[in-house]
Image (cartoon, rainbow, N blue to C red; front, side, top):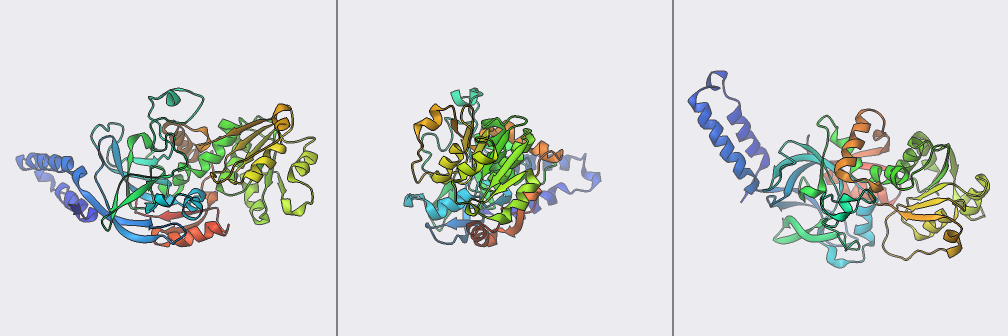
Length: 417
């Protein structure tokens, strides 16, 4: 069966709004028992709600009424309040090579409120503000126990990073199973995720702002602070000034870099980069030389740290070659799985280090609440990333803005807080 969430909530609220004279009566005791019984049955109800469904690749998303099944053991059902459109969503829709990854509900950068929990869940309860995590944290596997990585052996994508959508979902639409994207699927009013993939956050956090912490901001900021380990007084270059790149610029500044060179072929993004801490700007189109040579001449042999935030294998190589020999560190942050990348061995033999970073190296259950606190304490910028606010019905417009490079982040307002 399915139920209208709003009508169900109004019935509960109606039961709770009793006159004070009844608060200590036997009637109230009976009502309390009835309410407890109702709460125990709540998770067994299927919710019918709005979602943006990608039925096939390279086609607009369709706003549909879908069914969201109850959370099973160790699962949490979340009401999505706000979700942003990330480049990875667009990549899966337009560039994905696996046609069996559809139909799917996209979206993974979001924040919401716990609606119900399945058996075995003790960390969360209805009403908690949370951020879904596309990198799980079981706290039990060898990766989770190691301080060296934020990977997890028990997550949705363990051992199969080329497949971003999986059939293990609680979604159906028109009698068909709808796949889940990155274990989250947030272009929906409700979603169900494993408790390993949820981080509880401060109840004071504005969900339409902190949703950005669910992917882009942590990815870029952490790549600089956690993965590259940018040092005070160092020189840095950030390639690509989308949300991830701008977050990387912010991370370099927070780490104390003295020179932060923003590299992009769109000069309109340079003013925005300055807001996040960039000190210099280079447009490769303005130079006949290789960008690595331009940066080498600007920095007496190359930068100490470079971060590639585009997802382009050619840019990855340029970022590596822009590092100074001896100790330069280059971090691959941008997502792609379409091509191999390459470099001449001498680049590494000479002392450079080439690394990769996923979600900025943050272990989500610990890192996400810390980043939310940093925002609430005004030590982290979020509002400055948001260039557009839309509704879920406008998701295709938001995707078009991303495709054309006309936005940094578009936040979709899905449900009221």
